[in-house]
Length: 253
Image (cartoon, rainbow, N blue to C red; front, top):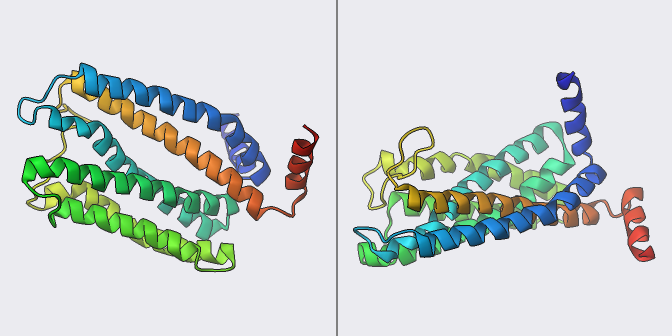
């Protein structure tokens, strides 16, 4: 029965050696798909999509800015859930996923802020304003950096992961603030143009490159997380038999 093997499959995947092999098999495919979809999205957004009737070609930064913004929130949510699982059930792999997600999420958040500033200058006449959306996104970057800094502040890595996990869970409250800030406050930032559950305000020839780039960033996150998690597991489990066996197999090649 499916209900019988799914928990067993998830339990096995939570084992460091099983996850190491699983991630190693999928990581190259994830990165390849990220590069392929990213190239298609950039061609569609920069070449095929028409100019906006108000913003002209300046809007094309949306194909980098919006997927990065979505990923900054998505990765933080993943980090928060993984931290909760790690703290409640003491699952080592959940700690690894949470802590290795933080640098990737911080990078996407930084890209969001930079591209938003570049887009805001011609639209608003300024590089930065203390708008609710911009400010909450900046707070999100500080939360990522706080998690990274707290994790590395402890000599005991698991103790550092637990302390950083508490901060990650507390910071989850900022994710809906970022998302709904344009609805809750009167902001300069434009409202949502893409509606998952209804009619989107964006024309299809602009929308499909945006959604394709979003899918590319998801695959990039998966591939990058798999690579970082594998490296972290080898370092964390250095004295275990399965790690020594991997080292011996690689030495024999």
